Length: 376
Image 1 (cartoon, helix red, strand yellow):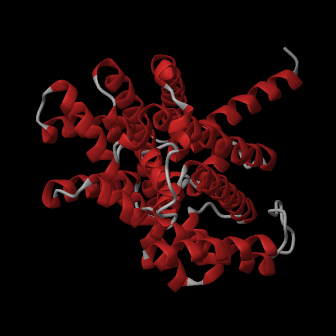
Image 2 (cartoon, one colour):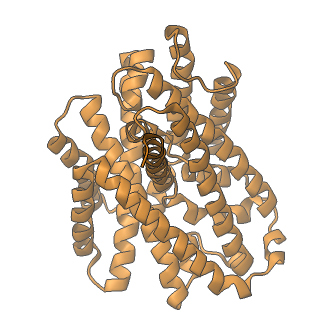
C-alpha cells in the first residue's frame, strides 16, 4: 500500500467520523416535534422554513470552522468568543453555552429514560441511573470512543428509519400533506431552529480532522444535508400516514411493533445527542476554564441528573426553553465574533464565503427568530 492510498484512507476515516459527530448532535430530540409543527405552518411553508434554517445553520457551521481554524490556542466556542469579544461577552456566552448543553442533556436524559422505563417496566429513576452510568463512562473516556459510538448510532437510526418507511409505506396518503392550513409560522420556526442546532461541535471536529479545512467544510455541508433529508423524510412519512392526528411527539402516534421501531429511532437519536452535548460541556470546562478531566465530567454530567431528580422538569418545556431562544442568541454572538476576528486576524487559514454580508444576514435572521418567538 503506497503513501497516497494510506493518506486517502486516513482522510476518509476522519471525514466519516466528523460527519457522524455532527449528524449525531443535530439529530436529537427536536425532529420528533417537527411533524406536529408542520401541521401549524402547512406542509409546503414548513418545508421552506426547514430549507432556510438548514442554510443558516450551515453558515453557522462554517463560522465555527472559521473561528476554530484561525484561533491558534485550543478553545471551545465560549473561549474563542472571549478572545475576540472580551471577558464579559465571553462569560455571557459561556453561561448560554452551558445552559444550552444543560437543557438539552436534561431533555435527552428524560426522554431516553422514559422510553427505557416503558419497555422494561423498571422505575424510570432506577433505569435512568443505569443509562446515566453508561453515558457517563463514554463521555469520560472522550472523543475517540465517542467517534465510534456516533458512527454506530447513526447507522442504527438509518436502518430503523428504513424499516419504518417500509412498514408504513402502504398507509401513506399524499393528500394528508396538503390538508393543513397555515395558522402559525413561529412555533415551527422555533422547533426547526432547535432541531438543526449543532454548530458548536465544530471545535471537536477540528480535532478529529487535525485542522484540515477541506474536511471541515465537507463535514459542514454533508453533516447538515443528512439531517435535512432525515427530518424531511421522517416528517413527510409521519404526516402522510397520520395527517392532523399526529401527536406532539411524533413517535407517540405509533403503536405495537411500529411503536417499538419509532421509539428505537428516538432513543438512538437522543442518546447520540446526549453524548455529544456532554462532551461539549465537559470540554468547555477543560479548555476554557482549566478544570480537570474528572471534575469537568462530574460537573457536566451530574448537574442535569440532579436537576431532574429534584425539580422533575417537563420534557417538552425543557426542550423549548433551550431551543430557539438560547441557540439563536448564541448564534448571534458567534456571528459578531466572526466580524471582530476578521479585523484582528490578517492571515486567515479559512474564511466563510460572502464577506461581511453573510454574518450580517445571519444576525438579522436569528434576531427575527428570537423576537418572533418572544412575541408569540
